[in-house]
Image (cartoon, rainbow, N blue to C red; front, top):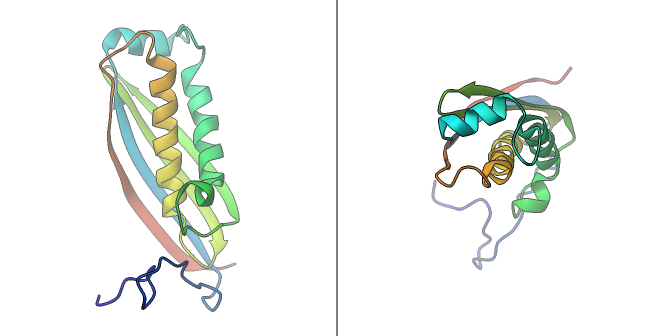
Length: 151
C-alpha cells in the first residue's frame, strides 16, 4: 500500500468516504482478558465486590462503548449497530471477555467489538481495584470479521 487511506495529499487527517460502498451485513468478534488474583475471582463469582456485580456492569459498559465508538476513535464512522453482545468466561485467575458486533452498513464493525472488549475490561479493573492491586489487561485482539450480502 503506497498511500494512507486516512491522510490526504497534504498530510492532513481525513475520514474515508464510504458513501459509494454497498451496504453489506457485517459482524466482528473480539476478545481480551483481565488477570485477577484468585481471591478477587472468588469475590467476583459471589458478586461480593465492594462495588457490586462487576460482570453485569462490565457487560452494560461494553455494549454502551460499542455504540459510542465514533466518539472515542478519531475518524471512525458511525455505524447503525443491530446487535452487540459481551460475554465473560470466569477462570481461576481472571476473566476472558468476548464481544460480538453486527450491522448492515458500508464499513466494518471490528472497532466496535474491540472497543466493547476494552471498556468491559476497564470496567472490571475499576470495580476490582479496591481488592486487587496486581490486575493486568492483556491480549485485546480481533478474532474474526465477516462480510455477507445484505438481506
